[in-house]
Length: 179
Image (tube, rainbow, N blue to C red; front, top):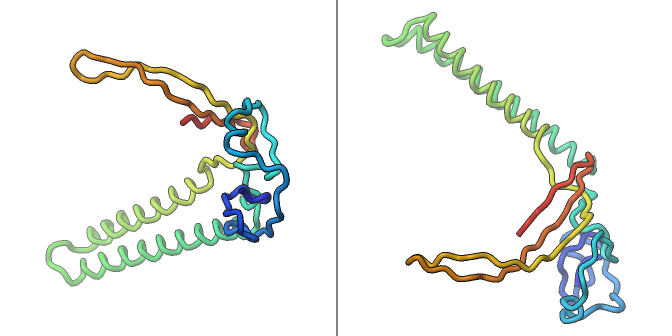
């Protein structure tokens, strides 16, 4: 059985979903596995289980707060490392014999700048990261056949099943997952 709220797999005797915590009610008219495999697949997706493939938690304010805090800590950590590098190389330039100031200070600035750039790219990549969050709009099962090489100029045919799921993201783009 599956959770009506989030679509997670549940054991028949579970009264609460282990994934989202929703209380489960007995499901009426449950199809057997044989009935499901004999039922033709329909385009479009609707189910009594809610929208599988779409998480309402992505719009949760706690998730946005987590991303913001994560970016802040990345920036603080990078600034700390940059300051340590600049101060460390400056001190080494005054006390060491291999590199003198201002050359040591410039090395510290270069390494500190690299730490800051890495943090900047990390923060920007989180903002432009792809998400597969969306609504399942279509699903297909296709039986296919392909030629498989066995090595010694021999080949044979292999039958397989290809599963395709179409997902429409919040920005209107369509993504396909094929297995």
